[in-house]
Amino acid sequence: MHRPFFIDLRSLPDGGKDISGQELPSFFALDPTDTIKAVSPLKYDLHVERDGGDLLISGRLEATFSLECGACLERFEQRVELDDYSSEIEIGKDDTINLTDTLREDTLLALPSYPRCDAGNVHPRQCPAEGRFEPALETAPDEPQSAGPGVWEALNKLN
Image 1 (cartoon, rainbow, N blue to C red):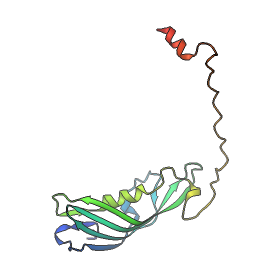
Image 2: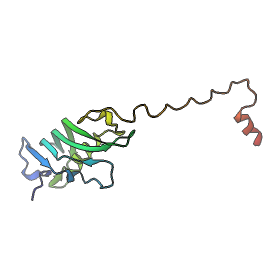
Image 3: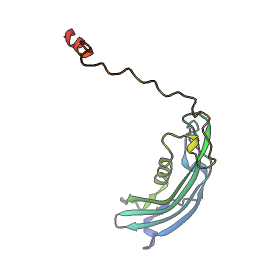
């Protein structure tokens, strides 16, 4: 059984160990209805080492995702490259630590919160919706103090 992210603390060498390889896009366990789709394997090259009561993970993570642009709603690809990846997990009473959730979450959190296709780093392009939407109209200027009773004054009269 292939389980590279299950670290057996009993057999972890003093200097730690290196793990590298790739996991299928299904590793990310994204809902099929989600606007985020993993389109490449997760590539990893990590060093795992015990430091007292913590497990230190460092190295590199890379994966490519298909996102939906927030402006034009077209799909585009975004590559996440965490070249200086670093994480720390507190060691509990378990003899084995599973890094899967930590690596999955850290990779997904590196995606943009408000994806825009013109910021995509795989196939750069200009967003087709650029300039299609007019900026919001300016709201009416604040009422001058001398304009008579304001809205707060009218509310005070109701009491």
